[in-house]
Image 1 (spheres, rainbow, N blue to C red):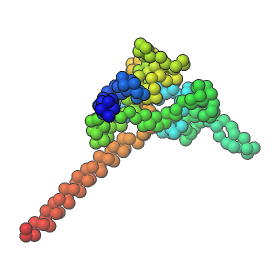
Image 2 (cartoon, one colour; image 1 turned 180 degrees about the vertical axis):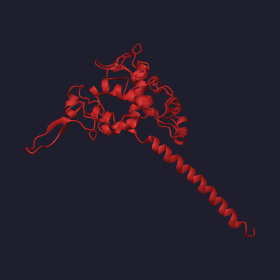
Image 3 (cartoon, helix red, strand yellow; image 1 turned 30 degrees about the vertical axis):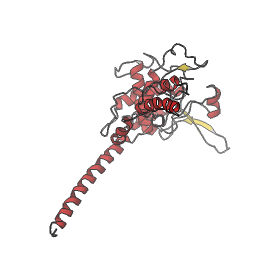
Image 4 (cartoon, rainbow, N blue to C red; image 1 turned 90 degrees about the horizontal axis):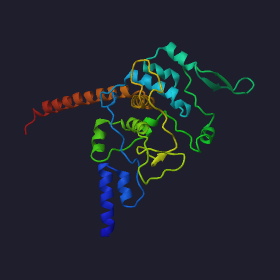
Length: 283
């Protein structure tokens, strides 16, 4: 019993403080936990209860997605018309949508056909179906990007996760995406990764993933003079995916603030009412 207790305590402490989860398990000969490294903390414009999206950054992130990520990853739940939230005009959105072909139908003969996309259409998938996506990606279809920034949540451990509840922390997904894109490196000495996979200590699913490093410096040209570096690309596309996952975040935060103000005023009025009523009562 004492040996079991001695083996569990270090693992529990490592999990609680959120430091080196994989290494702690490996030291005890147990199955390692991932990610090996916790995601890097990035200073996002949309962080905090009053955070807002940087539209310039979102437009750059869209450009990175279109020119790099869209070759493999779909964005099924985002319509072209939603891009007006990024600061584009209606005509610009229509022009952007016209670059895509979407499947429609059936026609009068019962056949499906392709047509030029319009603003009300959604981003088309790069593959005809999930089976086709799996067949060209070693049996694992690339995940859809629509909700990725909300789905990839890495808990920060005690005591941070307690504060996260009260501060409305929602940057875990973007932090994870940014860390993954900038985290490719050579595996440490003695670690073997499967053939066709690439070591990344920030990956949630294991020590390596099937996706090779997707982007590098000077791969995408920016029109606003922003740095054309891996670090900037990763930040921009991570912010864009956060918007895609929660496009109404700013409205939600504004509404939440107004509710808090209302509750504060209501509480004060109720206190004053109680005080006025009971002030006429003998105690």
